[in-house]
Length: 402
Image (cartoon, rainbow, N blue to C red; front, side, top):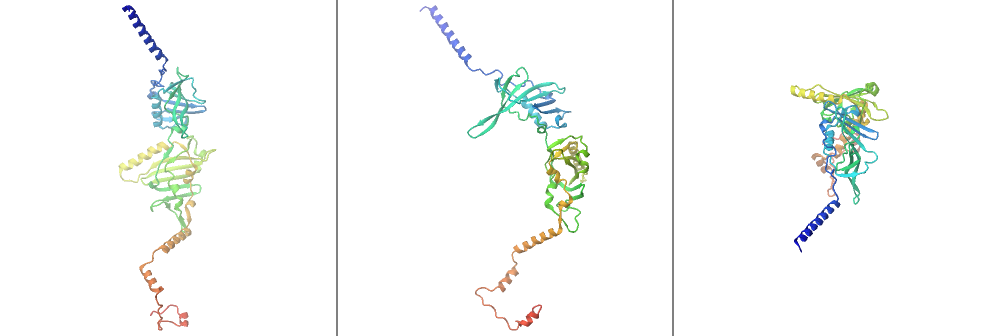
C-alpha cells in the first residue's frame, strides 16, 4: 500500500472517531445554563425599604420607617426585624435548582415585591405552592422546595428552589411579636383593683397576697388569687385595634383598672374595656411608670429607665386580649372573700384530723398498758376500803383520792 493511501485512511478514521464523539455528546442530556444561578441577581438588601406581599385578597406591607421596620397594614406596629432580615437574606441567596418551562405556580401564587424608599420596585418574585416529598411507606410528607418565577425576562419560566420561603405570607400578625410584657408574680408587692363595683387592694406584706381591709366574719380566699397575680406573666395580645379609638368608644373610661406595684417600685397600670364588636376579646391599654424604692442612685436610675423604655413600647397601642385574662384583672372584692366561719370550721376540721392521726404519747401508752387487762392476767380484787357503795357512788361528783 502506498504511503499516500495509508495517510488518507488514517485521516478518514480520525474524522469518523471525532464525528462519533460529537454525536454522543450532542445526544447526552444537557444541564440548563440557569441551574445554580441566583433567582434575583445583584439584589442589594440594604436598599430595600418596603416589602409588599399579596395573595388573592390578602395583603401585607412592611416598611423601614426611620431605621425601624413596621407593619404598615397593622397601624405601623413594630415588625419582627429578625424575621424580615432572615427572609431578605434568603431571597438574596436563592438559587435555581431545576428549570421547569411551562410549569404552573398553582391557582393562587403569592407576589413578593421589594421596593426602595421611593416605592420603586427593585425586584419581584411569584411564589407557587410549597412542594412536598411523600413517604408512602410511612404515610407522611416533608417540605421539598417551592416553585418560583421571576417577573423579568424569564417571567414565564418556573424554577424549583430547595427553600420553602414559608415566612413570606400576607398575614400581618405573622410579622410581629405578640408579647406585651412578662412579669413574674414573685416580683409583685401590691395589686390595686378598681371598677364600678368598688376599689380594693391585695398586699403581700404578710408574705402572701391578701386583702388589706378584711372585717370580722371575713376571710381571704387565696385559691382565687392565682389568676389575678399572674395576669401579667407572659401577657400576649390576640390582635390590635385602631389606637386612635377613644376610651369612651372602647369602654375603658367606665371599665376596670388593674394596677401592679413591684418590689422595686415599677408601676403597671392596665385599663380594661368592653369586648370588641363580634369578638369576645377585650380592649386593653397598658402604661408603665416607676417610683423607685431603692436609695441607691444607680439602681433608681436603672428602674426608671426600664419603666420609661417599656412604657414607650406598650403605651401607644390599643390591644385586644383574651376575655379570660381580662376577667382575671377585673375581679371584684367579693370574689376574694369567704365567710370566716367557713375558714374556722376548716381549720378545726384540719386540727381534728391531725389529732386523730397523731401517735400516742409515752404516758398514754403506759396508762393503756396499766388499765387494759391481758388474756392471761387475773382481774385485781377491789380493796374494800376504796370500793364505794352504790348510793355513795351515785351521789358523789368526784371520786375520793385514796
